[in-house]
Image 1 (spheres, rainbow, N blue to C red):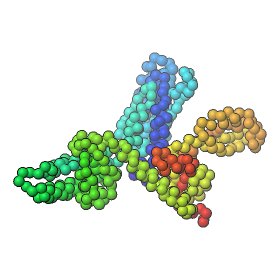
Image 2 (cartoon, helix red, strand yellow; image 1 turned 180 degrees about the vertical axis):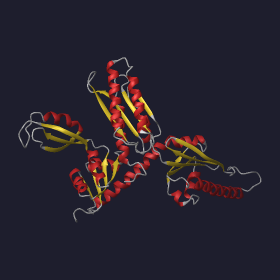
Image 3 (tube, rainbow, N blue to C red; image 1 turned 30 degrees about the horizontal axis):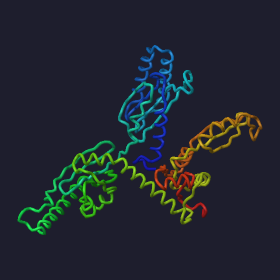
Image 4 (cartoon, rainbow, N blue to C red; image 1 turned 90 degrees about the vertical axis):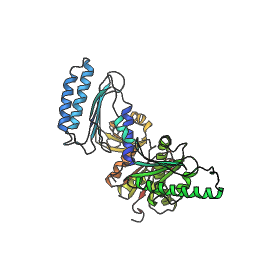
Length: 421
């Protein structure tokens, strides 16, 4: 899988982890958040943690002091596993989390390798984990071009993540529609049209110079009041490579900085639409293979698992709405193991049902849950072993709903026809 862009699987994993961490709270200031940027020496971070351990000895509360120092020791133990800081940096969250009221605290540790470089060195002890710096990575980072236009002026801007930059503002020089005294209406309209065409050509040249040089331009948004923006977009004023990147033409009341802010307000929906388009394309390819019975697609947990084991899957499609876990049951007496798949909410009742249940092999009442894993993660790990691309599909499109409801949330586009192999 490409490392040049964040995959939908990376973002799904990060979002799920951060959602989990955001819900955790500690007693007092007992939860440690540590951000280590690329290039930072592990030995330097270890020295800082030793100092913090010494400082924590001054905490008056015996319980808080113990929990903070235990957390620091756990973080140090995890850091020792790294000879050097990973190329994108390292984030560790650790602390005593109450499991069932006061006195039930248990140390939990989370180690995250960010999907892209972090640029902050931070140690914080608080009643919550500081996830906001990682949350920032979930924001759209690709660059979008913004071109606002009406008959009087135009503005060129770029939007990257939350960073907005106005690159150029242009006056059109096109006279208004009201005819100057002494000129015939036809002649005036002809001169105005010539000025408008010259303005469009000039604006197209500026847009080409501005946006074509942006290496990772994700798309171009054309906006403005009235029909001028549509006239410009339909004409041959933009380079063909730029025309292919036009993702939306939208209405705004202004063409100046205020108009750019209008576009930015609407940008999250526009950018979400781009991901929807990407999801639609991959889903439509899957539906084509299924609809034409080519043998190059399959769906369902068992069928897709079999295809993955055979190394036959090119693209694995998983609905983010899957709420299923894979459970490993083990007999503590004879070592017998079996796998079960069930909905998350059934897990507690299933665990209770194992109490006193005889082992199918040795008949001893020693069955217990040895391991649980989210089904999405289980399939994603299988896919990574065979260099299979993974697409996490949202449920917010018609195709996404179809994947979840009609195909069980698990589908695959194949590298080769399993039936012919």
